[in-house]
Length: 192
Image (cartoon, rainbow, N blue to C red; front, side, top):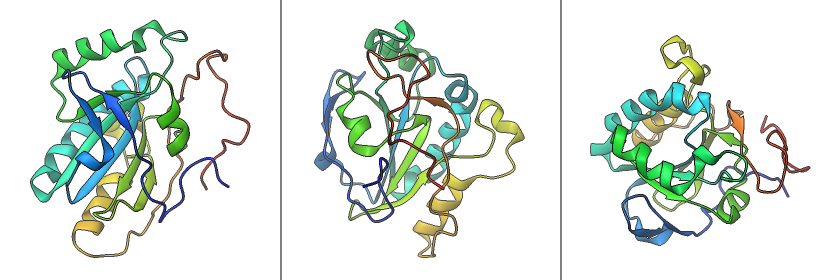
Protein backbone atom coordinates (compact mmCIF):
# COMPACT_ATOMS: atom_id res chain seq x y z
CA UNK A 1 0.00 0.00 0.00
CA UNK A 2 1.25 3.47 -0.89
CA UNK A 3 2.07 5.89 1.91
CA UNK A 4 -0.01 8.65 0.31
CA UNK A 5 -3.64 8.27 -0.77
CA UNK A 6 -4.14 7.17 -4.36
CA UNK A 7 -6.46 8.82 -6.85
CA UNK A 8 -9.95 7.43 -6.24
CA UNK A 9 -9.38 6.72 -2.54
CA UNK A 10 -11.94 7.97 -0.02
CA UNK A 11 -11.05 10.81 2.33
CA UNK A 12 -10.08 9.42 5.75
CA UNK A 13 -12.31 10.59 8.59
CA UNK A 14 -11.03 13.08 11.14
CA UNK A 15 -12.22 15.14 14.10
CA UNK A 16 -9.88 18.01 14.93
CA UNK A 17 -9.89 21.29 16.84
CA UNK A 18 -9.62 24.53 14.88
CA UNK A 19 -8.22 27.96 15.62
CA UNK A 20 -11.78 29.36 15.73
CA UNK A 21 -12.48 27.36 18.91
CA UNK A 22 -14.66 24.74 17.21
CA UNK A 23 -14.02 21.09 16.40
CA UNK A 24 -14.60 19.85 12.85
CA UNK A 25 -15.05 16.41 11.34
CA UNK A 26 -14.95 15.25 7.75
CA UNK A 27 -18.64 14.35 7.70
CA UNK A 28 -19.52 17.88 8.82
CA UNK A 29 -18.61 19.33 5.42
CA UNK A 30 -21.29 19.20 2.73
CA UNK A 31 -19.43 21.30 0.18
CA UNK A 32 -19.31 20.21 -3.46
CA UNK A 33 -15.50 20.01 -3.39
CA UNK A 34 -13.24 19.72 -0.37
CA UNK A 35 -9.60 20.79 -0.56
CA UNK A 36 -7.67 19.50 2.44
CA UNK A 37 -4.12 20.70 2.66
CA UNK A 38 -1.35 20.06 5.14
CA UNK A 39 0.46 23.21 6.14
CA UNK A 40 2.17 24.84 9.13
CA UNK A 41 3.29 28.19 10.48
CA UNK A 42 7.04 28.31 9.83
CA UNK A 43 7.76 26.68 6.45
CA UNK A 44 9.11 29.11 3.80
CA UNK A 45 7.21 27.19 1.09
CA UNK A 46 3.96 27.75 2.98
CA UNK A 47 4.72 31.40 3.73
CA UNK A 48 5.78 31.97 0.12
CA UNK A 49 2.60 30.48 -1.32
CA UNK A 50 -0.13 31.42 1.17
CA UNK A 51 -1.31 34.36 -0.91
CA UNK A 52 -1.63 32.12 -3.97
CA UNK A 53 -3.60 29.61 -1.90
CA UNK A 54 -5.80 32.49 -0.72
CA UNK A 55 -6.45 33.59 -4.29
CA UNK A 56 -7.37 30.05 -5.39
CA UNK A 57 -9.64 29.58 -2.37
CA UNK A 58 -11.34 32.92 -3.05
CA UNK A 59 -11.66 32.21 -6.77
CA UNK A 60 -13.57 28.96 -6.27
CA UNK A 61 -15.44 29.68 -3.02
CA UNK A 62 -18.72 30.61 -4.71
CA UNK A 63 -18.59 27.38 -6.74
CA UNK A 64 -18.89 25.17 -3.67
CA UNK A 65 -15.20 24.61 -2.97
CA UNK A 66 -14.12 24.57 0.70
CA UNK A 67 -10.48 24.80 1.77
CA UNK A 68 -9.46 23.18 5.07
CA UNK A 69 -5.89 23.51 6.35
CA UNK A 70 -4.36 21.01 8.76
CA UNK A 71 -1.18 21.55 10.75
CA UNK A 72 0.31 18.19 11.78
CA UNK A 73 3.82 19.43 12.52
CA UNK A 74 5.28 18.65 15.93
CA UNK A 75 5.73 21.72 18.11
CA UNK A 76 8.64 19.82 19.65
CA UNK A 77 10.50 20.16 16.35
CA UNK A 78 9.46 23.76 15.64
CA UNK A 79 7.88 25.69 18.50
CA UNK A 80 6.41 28.08 15.90
CA UNK A 81 4.07 25.29 14.81
CA UNK A 82 2.21 25.18 18.14
CA UNK A 83 -1.55 25.62 18.30
CA UNK A 84 -1.09 28.99 20.00
CA UNK A 85 0.96 30.21 17.04
CA UNK A 86 -1.68 28.84 14.67
CA UNK A 87 -4.28 31.03 16.39
CA UNK A 88 -1.98 34.05 16.15
CA UNK A 89 -1.28 33.43 12.47
CA UNK A 90 -4.96 33.20 11.58
CA UNK A 91 -5.68 36.38 13.55
CA UNK A 92 -2.91 38.19 11.69
CA UNK A 93 -3.68 37.02 8.15
CA UNK A 94 -7.44 36.19 8.16
CA UNK A 95 -7.01 33.32 5.72
CA UNK A 96 -10.24 32.13 4.04
CA UNK A 97 -9.94 28.58 5.33
CA UNK A 98 -10.39 26.67 8.55
CA UNK A 99 -7.11 25.86 10.30
CA UNK A 100 -7.19 22.53 12.13
CA UNK A 101 -4.64 21.04 14.52
CA UNK A 102 -3.56 17.39 14.18
CA UNK A 103 -1.41 17.14 17.30
CA UNK A 104 -1.38 13.32 17.30
CA UNK A 105 -0.28 13.31 13.62
CA UNK A 106 -2.77 10.49 12.98
CA UNK A 107 -4.53 12.45 10.24
CA UNK A 108 -1.24 13.22 8.46
CA UNK A 109 -0.47 9.50 8.49
CA UNK A 110 -3.97 8.56 7.28
CA UNK A 111 -3.67 10.92 4.30
CA UNK A 112 0.01 10.30 3.72
CA UNK A 113 0.99 13.94 3.98
CA UNK A 114 4.53 14.33 2.70
CA UNK A 115 5.29 18.03 2.78
CA UNK A 116 3.99 21.47 3.66
CA UNK A 117 2.07 22.40 1.71
CA UNK A 118 0.50 19.18 0.35
CA UNK A 119 -2.95 19.45 -1.26
CA UNK A 120 -5.67 16.80 -1.51
CA UNK A 121 -8.77 17.57 -3.62
CA UNK A 122 -11.90 15.48 -3.02
CA UNK A 123 -15.05 15.49 -5.12
CA UNK A 124 -18.60 15.49 -3.77
CA UNK A 125 -18.39 11.75 -3.05
CA UNK A 126 -15.15 12.51 -1.13
CA UNK A 127 -13.03 10.55 -3.57
CA UNK A 128 -9.53 11.88 -4.22
CA UNK A 129 -9.24 13.50 -7.65
CA UNK A 130 -6.00 15.48 -7.25
CA UNK A 131 -3.03 15.43 -4.90
CA UNK A 132 0.31 17.22 -4.82
CA UNK A 133 1.46 20.79 -5.21
CA UNK A 134 -0.47 23.97 -6.00
CA UNK A 135 2.23 25.28 -8.35
CA UNK A 136 5.85 24.73 -9.26
CA UNK A 137 7.40 27.60 -7.25
CA UNK A 138 5.74 27.80 -3.81
CA UNK A 139 8.58 29.78 -2.21
CA UNK A 140 7.82 32.60 -4.65
CA UNK A 141 4.36 32.13 -6.09
CA UNK A 142 4.63 35.08 -8.47
CA UNK A 143 7.23 33.12 -10.49
CA UNK A 144 4.99 30.09 -11.00
CA UNK A 145 4.79 28.64 -14.50
CA UNK A 146 2.34 25.86 -13.56
CA UNK A 147 -0.84 26.02 -11.47
CA UNK A 148 -1.88 22.40 -10.99
CA UNK A 149 -4.28 22.97 -8.09
CA UNK A 150 -6.29 25.67 -9.85
CA UNK A 151 -6.22 23.66 -13.08
CA UNK A 152 -7.55 20.58 -11.27
CA UNK A 153 -10.37 22.54 -9.64
CA UNK A 154 -11.31 24.19 -12.94
CA UNK A 155 -11.45 20.83 -14.69
CA UNK A 156 -13.44 19.18 -11.89
CA UNK A 157 -16.01 21.96 -11.76
CA UNK A 158 -16.51 22.01 -15.53
CA UNK A 159 -16.85 18.24 -15.83
CA UNK A 160 -13.55 17.72 -17.61
CA UNK A 161 -10.89 15.14 -16.93
CA UNK A 162 -8.09 16.40 -14.70
CA UNK A 163 -5.08 16.37 -16.99
CA UNK A 164 -2.50 16.04 -14.21
CA UNK A 165 -4.16 14.35 -11.20
CA UNK A 166 -0.95 13.78 -9.23
CA UNK A 167 2.19 15.82 -8.73
CA UNK A 168 4.95 15.78 -6.16
CA UNK A 169 4.31 18.31 -3.41
CA UNK A 170 7.05 20.92 -3.08
CA UNK A 171 7.93 22.07 0.41
CA UNK A 172 9.38 21.12 3.78
CA UNK A 173 8.71 17.62 5.02
CA UNK A 174 6.12 17.14 7.75
CA UNK A 175 7.85 17.44 11.13
CA UNK A 176 7.24 14.10 12.84
CA UNK A 177 7.31 14.07 16.62
CA UNK A 178 10.41 12.49 18.14
CA UNK A 179 12.30 12.46 14.84
CA UNK A 180 15.00 14.71 13.35
CA UNK A 181 13.61 17.71 11.44
CA UNK A 182 14.36 16.24 8.00
CA UNK A 183 13.13 12.69 8.78
CA UNK A 184 10.42 11.08 6.69
CA UNK A 185 8.72 7.71 7.23
CA UNK A 186 10.62 4.93 5.43
CA UNK A 187 7.71 4.17 3.09
CA UNK A 188 7.14 7.82 2.15
CA UNK A 189 8.39 8.62 -1.32
CA UNK A 190 7.72 10.83 -4.33
CA UNK A 191 4.25 10.42 -5.80
CA UNK A 192 5.39 10.29 -9.42
